[in-house]
Image (cartoon, rainbow, N blue to C red):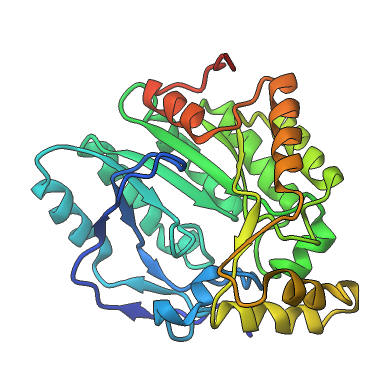
Length: 301
């Protein structure tokens, strides 16, 4: 896989897709993917699964006339909602630095009174802190950095072309200083790789030090045809992961959901440490903060 994505363009008939409410997740009404594919190269990426039918996933393509199409769709809505960006393609991929399509979309969402939620593995999001800060007091806004491990060296093996965790935490601090509600989506939690106590505590504490207001987690990962094979090839290719594939096969077989064997203990650890540091640790708490439109302290009680 090339270190540089090949630029292309892809036709799209619509961009906004209605979402089903999920009480145990971030709150949003629609998803928005301005790009197709991703250049981060994460070895565990669920979007590599065959069921999504995304050919050449590691090559990023921008949706043709994306901003004009988005403007028409937003204008046609009778009432504003909250749009999540980053569900299938990171909105801050390598093309976005020059194309600024994501930045343009944020401006359009603001103009039409829509809120926004974003998940990313990129530090480029800090560039748009001025626009994101303008949502405050106007519409719900949250930004979640997807961080699997706080260790740059391990992240380089698991997410070879994404920004190192250290840079993501720097970007988090930049957003927090601008008044943007931000924090960590500790996702995925890779059994036998990133579900140790030390890693969980490290991510929580660095989130707090970086001005983040929350750490949320599902305490596991998903594997299915396409994704599973790609992940196992990566495990086989590196001596640091010796024996890990066997543990996955024995523990999960062909299961889709692969929770950490210590999920209960890790949840208790996360909740206790977040409470000690004054961080939110549930989606309900994060959603409440986002609806308030300002990144203030939320009582844990």
